[in-house]
Amino acid sequence: MARVAIVTGGTRGIGAAISLALKERGHTVVANYAGNEEKAKAFTDETGIPAYKWDVGDHEACLVGCQQVEADVGPIDIVVNNAGITRDGTLHRMTFDDWNEVMRINLGGCFNMAKATFGGMRDRGWGRIINIGSINGQAGQYGQVNYAAAKSGIHGFTKALAQEGAKFGVLVNAIAPGYIDTDMVAAVPEPVLEKIVAKIPVGRLGNAYEIARGVAFLASDNAGFVTGSTLSINGGQHMY
Ligand SMILES: NC(=O)c1ccc[n+]([C@@H]2O[C@H](COP(=O)([O-])OP(=O)(O)OC[C@H]3O[C@@H](n4cnc5c(N)ncnc54)[C@H](OP(=O)(O)O)[C@@H]3O)[C@@H](O)[C@H]2O)c1
Image (cartoon, rainbow, N blue to C red; front, side):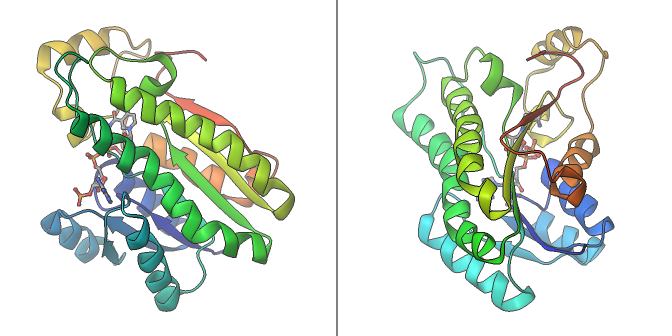
């Protein structure tokens, strides 16, 4: 059945692939983004998927943004919390601002978007919230105490909200991607990346569409008995 879906950070990288995969399955899709106007415009021109700009770390902006989306395209049935940033550095070098921004956007964004949409889903008796965590939230990663903590928090958030939503038909799941070939991973220095790829049993980085297909499954009626789960899509790098 066709639904209304919003994908945060949905205009590039993994989010763009998710937006497209949901559109291909017949859903009405809206993508949110933070500020890369050029990528957002190119994405909308190419796909016809409208892009809405706001900061998912801003609680009020999420409430207002989701209200606007609902006024434009109808009640939101599916939320994909994909927006995320990195501010890497060992604890020794990491500033409080590096810590706070990652928590505010990566973890706070999930709370803010859920607050804006969960009530409506519950009232209508159907909803899907899919949170994009990370292998580094499961296994930890050197130089990422902020990111690993936020992503690990997403996995806890998912399991707790799943318990609240289940009896109202609102299913909440997470995907923990491994290393996927996007701008975020392009920022990792080449020698570090080579070492990472050497540890992936399938011998390559993942593709954004490999994550998007997992999201499309979790958003579908076929996933009606799946909630509170984390789907690891990581080429076998971390078996959890
Ligand atoms: N790539 C990987 O290997 C990997 C692995 C595990 C998990 N993940 C997770 O998967 C998600 C997507 O990663 P990616 O590699 O596709 O990232 P990316 O290429 O850096 O894209 C990030 C997206 O998030 C948006 N965004 C960032 N901050 C935002 C904010 N405050 N409010 C709204 N949107 C915001 C960006 O918007 P603009 O375009 O406007 O900047 C962009 O659309 C992230 O949560 C990431 O942590 C990625």
